Structures are given as structure tokens and as C-alpha cells.
Image 1: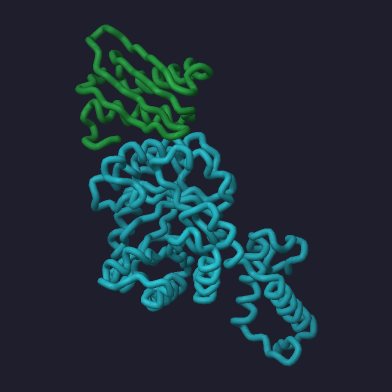
Image 2: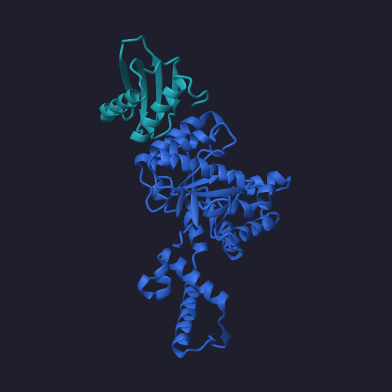
Length: 306
Length: 96
């Protein structure tokens, strides 16, 4: 299956016409048009229709178009879907406060009905549950496997901290376990893991350091709350020239071993085993999708999956 | 036919937005639209056409509309008009 690059996604408040009209300029891998936390209850209706109308004719560049609806247990969730899905433009619905497989299955059922009603391809709208509570973390694998529409799990750090009665610190050590648990649950389910926002928009160095750590932990991307954060996140989640070079060497060593008919592969004095090959393939795939390496320079096995 | 029950205002005075006030009007009086603001000189015809189209789609035949435009895009004009009608007809209790 083709890999979708989701290094960055930027939240766009649904009640802000100016930001809605400039989404194509952010350069993010995804834009998340937000009707949930960024919008006060008395503005939900206005935001919902601003988003729905923007979806009809506004440009979004190459960004994946996603909408964060209100939870289906609120008075607004179902109406949000009824407004945005008929446009046929929504690629992913972010489901906030997902805590069980049933939450995802209910959304799946509503989406199936709306897609059928409006002549859309069945299953075309994907789901990314936002896991942002203790219960959500404990049931993360159930949530990730509840529907074939789920393509990633996304972590919500602020809500999680509040839910467990903890305190958010600058180092965010208190979030280490839920983050690791979410990555394991997502990867066991074969979907991506996306990290929470870095809310200090003035501290781009801090954002970069944290994003690099999250990539090392296994996350595939991170949310942004300001356009300035997008490029920093891309840099953190993109392989370095050295990593790309090493990955190419690994793949070349594999090809040479195949020609020799040798089952043992080594690079220099280092054995190349399956995880190393898998990591090299992933590095090259992300590098290619990020425009860091020309398609012609890729091994054939990578070109096939792009 | 959609009957407006109350006067409502939607939108903001931020750049690329508009303030739209929708008022009920006596049956048979039709739609009247007045437009002022920064984009009015250049785009008042387009703004009025968009507002009239949304009102027609939503079955509103009698209404008075006052708009203060701050260079709103077409999608914003449509959304603000639609939200105003939904609120004025009591189809949603909360709106800004």
C-alpha cells in the first residue's frame, strides 16, 4: 500500500476565514480544519459552515485535507459530518477523545451512510482517532483496529495530562509512557503514529529537538499550531543526507548479495539484518516523498511502492 | 418557503470577513440587500448575487439583508448567509 507522508499537519481554526483562505500556502503535509477545541460553543455553527463552504472551492495545495469534528457524543458531531462530508473533499476525519473501538465504529457507520447518500466512494474518508485520555491509551490498539478506515493514531498531550491529573512540564517526561504506548499500539495495528502539538510557537529550537526525539521514538509526524512550525517539523522528520547515503549503501549491499547468491549480507564489517533493511527502505521512501532524493536514484523495490 | 423568526447578525469585522444582519420582512416584500464596507465599491454586485443565491437555495423569499464587507471571499459570504438563515429560523440555537 502506498505510504502517505504525514510529517506535519497544521490546525486551522474553523472560525477564521483568513486562515481558511490561505491553507495552500502553509506547505504542510496535511491541514486540519478544526471545529472542535479551537472553536467556542457559540461559534460552532458558523465554523462548521465556513469549513463546509471553504471545502467547496478553496485551494489546499498538496496538503491532505482533514477535519477535526466534535465528538459524536456532543450536540455538534453529527451535524459537523453532515455539513463537510457531502463536499467530497474531506480525506480524513480526526475523531477527538477516542476511548474505545465503539467510538470509531460509530463514526465508521455514519461515514458509510453519508458516503452512500452523497454518491461518494465507500470507505474513501479515512479516520485518525485522537487518543488523549488514560482510557484511550489503554485501549489504543482496539481503537486502531476498529475500522479499516483508521490510518493513524494521534496523541493529544494537553488533554491526556489533564485527564490523569498530572502537570505538563517543559521536558514533557510525564508524557513518555503514553507516547510509547501509543506508538506501540499504532505500529502493531499497521498504522502511523502522530504526535501532539508543541504549543510554544516562539521556541522553534525546542520544537526541533522534541520533534527529533519523537521521530526516534517511532512517530511519523507531529501537529503544528503555527505556520512557522511546519518547516521545522519537516526538517526533524526527514532523513539527513548521511542517513539517506547509508540507506542507499544498505540497499546496494542487498542487491550485490542477491547477485552473488549469498544469504549473508554485510556492509563493511557490519552485518545487515532484516530490521536494518526495513529501516533503510523506510528512510528512502520518506526521502523520496519529501523530495530529498530523485526517484531515478532509488532501488527498484522502493520505486514500486511509491 | 422558509420563514425568518428573528433578526440575527453573523460574521466579524476581521479582514476577509463580513458582518451580515438578516431581518425578517413582511410576506411578499421580497429580498432587499444593502452593502457597505471596504469591498463594497468593487464587489457589491457579486456579493449581492451570492447572498440572493443562498437565500433562494434555502427557500427565503422575504428578508432584509445588511452587509458590512471587509473583503470577504465568496465562501465566507455563502457561509455567513447560511448560518444567519439557520439561526434566524431557529434551526440552531447558538451562532456568532
